[in-house]
Amino acid sequence: MKQLIECVPNFSEGRDSSVIEQIADAIRSVKGVKLLNVDPGKAANRTVMTFVGAPQAVVDAAFLGIQKAAELIDMSQQTGEHPRIGATDVCPLIPISNIEMHEVVEYAHILGARVANELNIPGYYYEFAASCEERKNLAVVRQGEYEGLKTKLVDPHWKPDFGPAEFNTAIKTGATAISARNFLIAYNINLNTSSIPTAHAIACDVREKGRVKREGNQKDGAIIRDENGNALWSPGTLKYLKAIGWYIEEYKLAQVSMNLTNMHETPIHCVFEEVSKKAIARGVKVTGSELIGLIPKSALVEAGIYFLKKEEKSTSVPESEIIEAAARAMGLDALMPFHPKERIIEYLLNEDFD
Image (cartoon, rainbow, N blue to C red; front, side):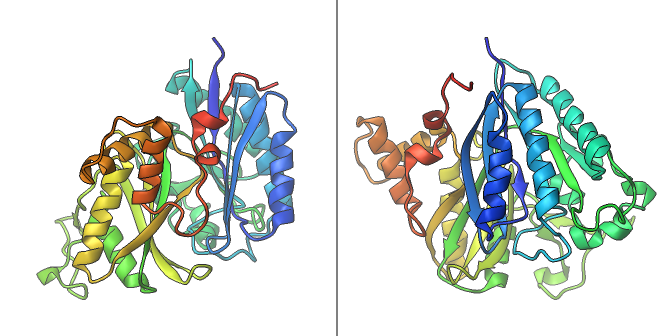
C-alpha cells in the first residue's frame, strides 16, 4: 500500500506569472510527485500550490520549491493583503493515505532541517510538528509578519526551531513555517461592501477566537484583562474556524477570508450560512464565495445535500448535480468560473505518480 502525503506551500508571489511558473516547474521536476493545483491571488500577492506524492518525493519537491522561491522573491519589496513571514510563508504536509500523523511530523522535521542546513533559512514548526504548545497556532507563529522578524528572531523566547537566529541572513527570504496538519479548507466569502471594518467585524463574529472583550461591549471601550494583565476574549460562533476581513482591490469588494481546520465539525455550508446571517445583522449581504486551492469531494457533497433539502428538492440525483447545487448555493463561481474537476482533490488524484 503506497504512502501518500499532500503538500500545500503558500508562496509570497501572486502577480508575476514567470516567478510562479518557475517555482511550479521546480516542484514538477521531482519524479513521483503530481502537482494538482496552482492558485495565484493578485491582491493577496500569494500563490497556493498543491501537490501529492510519496513522502520523500514530496519533501524533495517542497525543498526545491522553497529554494526557488528564495532565489526569486525579495521580501523586502513584497506587499499584499495576506499575512506572511517569508518567500515561502507556510509549507504544511498532510497525510493522505497509509501514513500516520506522527510519521508526517518526522518528514516535516526532515524538511525543516534541510531548509536550515542547505538554504540557511530560519523558521518555525507549527500544528502537529510544533516544538511547544505556544507554537501550534500559525497565527501566533506569524505574529509580527516579515517586518517583525528582525526583533523576533533574536528574541530568546522566539528562537527559530530551525535555521539561524538572526535576520541578516534572511533579508530577502524571511522565515518559513513548516507543519504537519490535517486537511484544511481555505475559503473566502464575498460581501457587497468595500468596508474592511465590516468584514473584520463579521470575521470576529464567527471565528473561534472571537474578539477582545471591551468595557460596555464598545469597540473603543477599554480592554478587559485578567489578573495577570492578559486580554480576555469573547469566542465567536464557529469552532475550528480562523478568519480575518480584508478588501480585494482586484474585485472591488471586501471578503471574510477563512481557514476551516476541521471540516467535519464545522462544514463549509455551515460557515456560509453563519457568515450570511452575521452579514445581514450588520447591514450587508453575501454575494458569493471562492475556494483557494482544493477541497475534498465529501465537503461539497454534504453541502449540496444540505442546500437541496433547504430548497425542498430531491437529493436522489447524480453526485455531479449535488455538487453543482452546492456550488450554485454558495456562489462559488461569483468571481471566476468554478470547475469541480479542477478543484476537487479526488478528481485530480490517481495512483500513477511516476
